[in-house]
Picture 1 (cartoon, protein in one colour):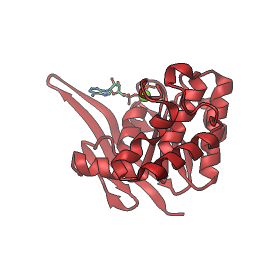
Picture 2 (tube, rainbow, N blue to C red; picture 1 turned 180 degrees about the horizontal axis):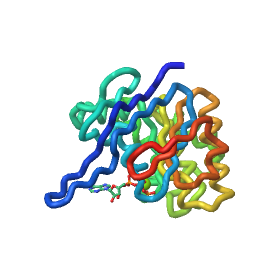
Picture 3 (cartoon, rainbow, N blue to C red; picture 1 turned 45 degrees about the vertical axis):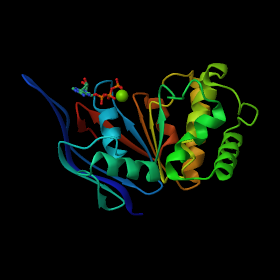
Length: 223
Ligand SMILES: Nc1ncnc2c1ncn2[C@@H]1O[C@H](COP(=O)(O)OP(=O)(O)OP(=O)(O)O)[C@@H](O)[C@H]1O
Ligand SMILES: [Mg+2]
């Protein structure tokens, strides 16, 4: 299977005047199409920084990132945003839902920037909410949903532009372990339907859901 993502000697360095923080120190990584990769490491090891590079939220200080063979490590902010919008769906630990929007409005919001028409937008949103078991919660606002339900809304939202890659940063970090399992099974199901999934976590128990574990420690890959 071909590589969907490739990192070549990626460094991320923050220069804070007197001190220089080397957060990623020469990362080489290949993720194949249809992988379910788990990036595992302790707090502060550079997991979120690495995921931000992989998902075009940030660019490296040095090194190359190839997405579908295309170098994205030197793109402008606008071009990066374009790549993200088309190719990548995001799921975050804090859910990042907009509080004044309903579940359905939260899910459909990202399509607004992709020129999807009103009717199609609504259909996609409803189908996705049904697919994550929230058909009865479409008009609830985030405050009227449980943590697990909020994360399912976030997963539905991540899928609305039909991305090839889903990235999730500690998706089970703010929910109990049983609900976490439900979330991981939804991600696993999406992976089995052909999407590449990348999950970042400090929780080694999540490895059973993935087919590939990448360990990171102090900004380098451990294994
Ligand atoms: N903008 C920044 N400027 C300076 N240092 C930063 C910046 N962003 C992150 N760091 C540092 O980089 C290191 C790695 O951060 P990162 O958020 O990638 O860790 P993490 O593995 O995701 O940790 P956690 O499990 O706690 O989320 C930390 O020591 C952090 O303080
Ligand atoms: Mg983090």
